[in-house]
Image (cartoon, rainbow, N blue to C red; front, top):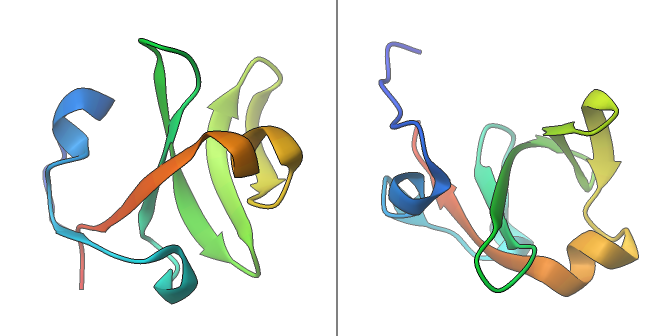
Length: 80
């Protein structure tokens, strides 16, 4: 997509434009506050799922899985 994305969630969360959870499109970044200091990011793939790195490797996960539902923070569209 010829887009340079910064490395950390702390900076990625300020890139692109904010989008509502109800307006997510494939390719949007979804962010989670997983603890007081830890943040996590994935790429929305459609059908209520996102792709991300987990302790099990790269995996697809449903956004409505309780842990991610509870820790959802925001989403950003960095490519059009």
